[in-house]
Each structure stands twice: as C-alpha cells, then as structure tokens.
Length: 484
Image (cartoon, rainbow, N blue to C red; front, top):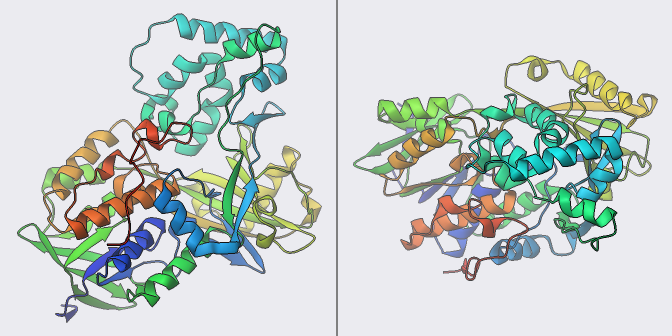
C-alpha cells in the first residue's frame, strides 16, 4: 500500500496546462483548498515554452485571442506589459507558391492561374448545385463547400499529414471548427469587375506573451501557489479510488514512492483514455472498451537555430507540399523578438506522427538533419546557417475525430457524469480539439459547477457557432464572475 494522507487536500486538480491551472485559479478565487498534480517537470502542458541555449520556442504556435471576457481579463492581469500585440501572417505552401491563410478566393484564383482556376470554379459550381446531404466526414464537408478540386489542392495532403488517416475517416466536426468558409463565385465576380472586393478574414493580430506562452502559465502557477494551492510537478497520478459515486482519494507517484491523498473532489484535464484507466474499481467493460478506442495524434517539433535573422516574415507556414514530410513551420522571431537571440532566429518544424513510429523514434541528430533538408528543399532555409537544433516529442497533442470517437466519448461521458465530485474539461479531458481559450473556459465552467453546484454546459464549448472567431458572441455567454 502507498503512504496514505488521511487529511483531505481539498480538490485535486489533475494537470497543470492552461485548463488545469485555470481551474486552480478559480478555486483560489472562491477560497477553496486544493493541490495541482502534474506529471511533467514544468507547467503549461502543450502550451509550455521550451528553452535551449537562450532560445525559447512554442510547441505549436499559440495565439492568444478570445471573445470570452473572463479569459481575456485573466491573461491581461497575469501578463501586464509583457503581453504583446502581434501582427498575424500565415500562408500555405503549395505547388511552389505561397497562398494567404485563411484562404481568400481572390488570392487562390490569382495564384492558381486561369486554366486551373477555371477547373476549380467548375468543380466548385458542381458542388454548389449538387445534393446537400449532411456531411459526415471531413472530405464531404470541404468538398460540399469548396469543390473536390480545391479539396485535393488545399486540404487533402495537409489534413492527412496531421491525422495520419484519410479525410474520409475524419469526422466533419473538425472541419466545422477549424476552417473558414469563402466564396469562389464572389471572387470571380470581383476579378471581372462585377462586384467590389470584400473578403472577410479572421483576426489580423493577436496577443502573445513576450517570452512565449509558457511565461503566462509560469505566472499563473505562481499566483495559484501564492494563494494557497500548491503546484506539484513530476507527480503523475496513477489511480483514482472511488466508492458510491464519489472519488475519495488519488494515488500519485513521486520517484519510486507512491502516496495516497484523500480528496473532497477531482477536477481533471487528463486525457479521457488515461482517466478511465486510472479508476479503481475499474469502470464497466463497455466504458473501458470505449476509452481504449479513443485515438490521439502525437507530434515532434524540431527547433532549428539559424543565423538567418529574417528567414521569412510569417508567424507560421502550412506545408501542403506532398513531398515534404513536415506539416508546418513556425518562425519564432516573428512571434516575439524575446524568443530568440539577437542576429539570429529559431524555426520550429512540426512533424505529425504516432508515438512509436519512425519519426517519433528517430534520434535527435537525424531529426535535425531531416528538418534542415525539408526546409532547404522548398527554399525556406540556407542549411549552412543552421548552427544548432533540438527535437521535442509531444504525446497526445491532438484528440482524433475518427469514425468511432463520438460514440466512444458519449459512453465515457455518461459514466463519468455518475460521479458527484469528478469533472473533466480541456482539450483531452473532453476529447475535443479546443483552442486554448476554449479549454480555459471549459475549466472555468466545470470548476464553478463543482464549487457552486451550477449546471453550466461544459460540453457545448467550441461546439456552437458563437464560440468561433468569426461568429457573433451569444448574449451573456462570457459574463461569469470568477470571484465568489
């Protein structure tokens, strides 16, 4: 038996990423006791900032933009003058050309050329005139809106890089959450002078901590600790003990030792598959089976330090070139000068993979060579200027929206809701590809439900249109006061 602490720690917060630390922050604002338990040796989760030899890099490019007032206030209060306003520039590399992202129809038409644009337009027209059955898959959703030819050009290759499965096996919800619509027909009218040019884009600037997103979570973790809730790093949770619909203790591992902590409740951002596997007694067989069916996409970031100060102007570029194994490249100097050393920059080359596959297992030196070759081949990098590089593995980065995930999540959700003092939230805690602010908002709602006995709908976040960047914010959506 592990060592047992019979005095309750209050609420156990599992995970010290954006969602977990936000939950802990809410507990402090409501005068509740608790402890944050994190398996990693630093806070931030996938939003942490890694530092190597004076270079700081973000694991994936985390813009700070939200329509949720409590989230925005939390960010601004934490960062103050260290919270920068940055211009957004991102493009797609395809067929040797760079296209604006989000895609604008005028740019697509102008760069593809007359013949290919005509073929895309005919494909687009066919899609608009065709049957409009409800799209079940990513491929169907995009093809219905843009036509098959644009799908093949701008969506198929990159999407299959990200997920490792065909677009016909990815559920349409991911497309609805992540892709902005645009009208090719309106662009053609503009080019012919029959209509004034008006293209609605996503936000053109965003906020960003001067030293990367990890700076935000380091500050908030410090505030949480100063308010009386310890943040324990390097202490993974191995099991949750429960009885009669209540979790009464969690078991953590600290090195070779295990410790049994009595709790009043648990709020968790852990992956649903992991959470279910930790329950003792075990969940019913159908719930365990559902959890085993959930899949995750991992990725590896290869950071290249280069003496080229201005490699390219973008914050990030999507690499739709099928010959390039990398899926995206970040230019950290374009995010913040505070991330790089003067007279140089750092590029983050992203490889989507599955834990244990070739890219995941590739030694660091080989990964650095591969990333250098990939960027050289498409003209983004002079390899002679690269003087250092490092590889970072990121497990469970993206919950997969494959053919069986919806039913599996429903089974797990139904079972977890039978617990009176256990709530789950965040990207992996809901198995939903949430943005950072949405993950934080789910943590706020779930934690308030736990402390105040309210019934906010955590599962609707980022599922309804009002949460998306372009949609109007529903009245009253973000007026929750975090202070009791």
